[in-house]
Length: 188
Image (cartoon, rainbow, N blue to C red; front, side, top):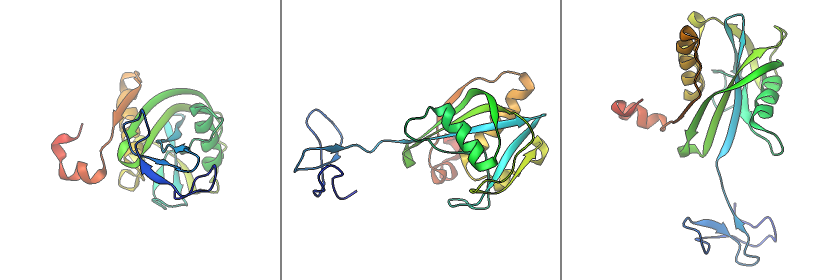
């Protein structure tokens, strides 16, 4: 961001009075332009013991498998965002959403939230952002082809929790992938 969305003036980095972080501030109208983490909301859609995954048709990670999800829009709740994204990416309707995983990714200024959900029916198809959509049994999950670590962690937790029939809400930070690869002892 280079120009103020309020008055069009050029922006400067400075620490506003009463703050402790550098922010983009307009010297002309004094508007502070906060940049905050974005929320990605999605579902872990279930049908007869299987999980619905989408093969991405867009970057990043085009061609890799993911749970349906995407950026939350203004004027919607996280559940509404997860339902909308599942409909957009998999043409699938879900119900019975239950908060399941919440990952903090400060290195990319995002928070990823996934809800366990039941598919209303087996009527699904690839949406505009998906190449294909399929149901997978645990043994058939394409683990090396998963698009994002948050998806892999959510699936791993689900298959472990399913054995116990206990689904605690999990909240954890995830380090950048290169940190996990270079510091394996710090993985949790």
